[in-house]
Length: 154
Image 1 (tube, helix red, strand yellow):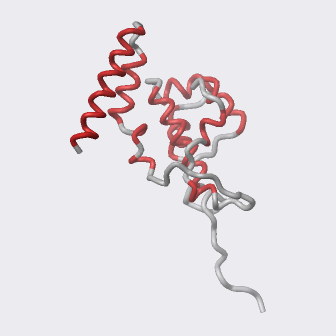
Image 2: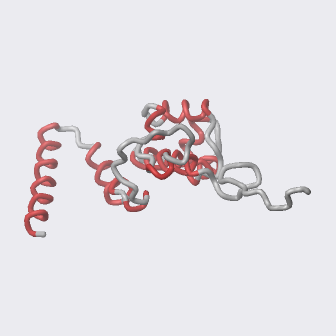
Image 3: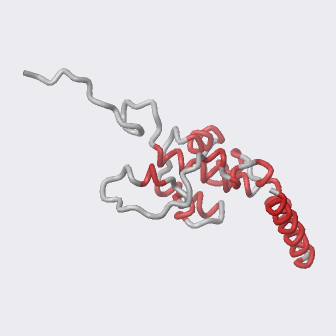
């Protein structure tokens, strides 16, 4: 007797409308770094021979990034390839056979992480334009003092 049960289609496989969680994570990291650098999707695409629409699909995880494109992205975005896999939630990591676990810092959804907030991106981008090391240190001191006062008052 033939098995008539429908076979489950896994995310990121042929026939699935759902991108693989690793592809989504890599795309989020591409977007994070591109945004931190103040680069448009069009400029990034142009630098690696793609259209901005293809970059959009990478950033959503709809298209997988090939090894060669990942290498190019790392070069253009000035990060090692490993950057694209950093901070991957433990829930994604543990879904792979043979994974023995690490101590994940957080399983907080990406949209809640501090580095993904638009204000944080603006602050980092603006801070990176400061040339004078004395002024940079003063800005850090001021921000640190404000953060410490909020902690005390909380």
